[in-house]
Length: 266
Ligand code: ADP
Image 1: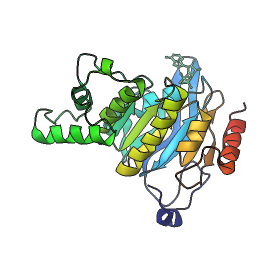
Image 2: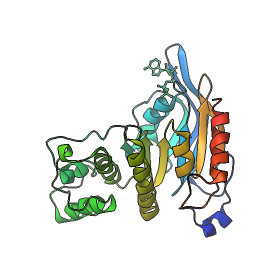
Image 3: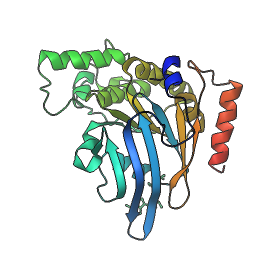
């Protein structure tokens, strides 16, 4: 987590790879090809422990492809991608937690059971320790009192919090969020963004957020990596060196939003 003290030790940088720290997530020279299409080429990105990085880019620039690689779904690629130093093809992706655009909950299961789905395979969900871990996560995401509710009884924002708790249940080294708020209305979205920041601050989890929403990226992240080009690559990285809590209307934040939008070529 970036505190003022940490910032002194490792000043924010505009490079894709921050110096002076071993990255939790390291992408080096990533190249992904589908038949005749090269989806990504020369992608470099390093994310250090506790950092919050957003990845933005226009449709077709390879965001989904990058997520597939990071989560271990895409084994055919060039370059090297590691989590905690382990190649994603050799189990590194096991240390990655995912939250998708849709909560993807089991309708017939209650909140507790849905969160428990995210526990590591070697943890028996029926033990007292596992139950405590799940209840702790339910509390972390602000759903105390809803452990026995079913998804049909929850609002969209609450359902997405269950998905967040499930993504954290594994205690992942990196939490990957794929457009997690894009299906929510504007006010709920703002609430959920602030809630995510609270959870991130409390747990210190390293977060990579993929989003097409520039305002969201700049409001939430320490750095914003802008993907673009054909094939897609990291075209620029924008540091958001603004203390939290941030004001969405802050002039510096708005200026950075314009910078990212300009980098996207919009
Ligand atoms: P984004 O998520 O940013 O919209 P994608 O990762 O889905 O981008 O796609 C990047 C490029 O790779 C696009 O040109 C897309 O058409 C191509 N692509 C993605 N998946 C496949 C696939 N399974 N087969 C062939 N081409 C693909």
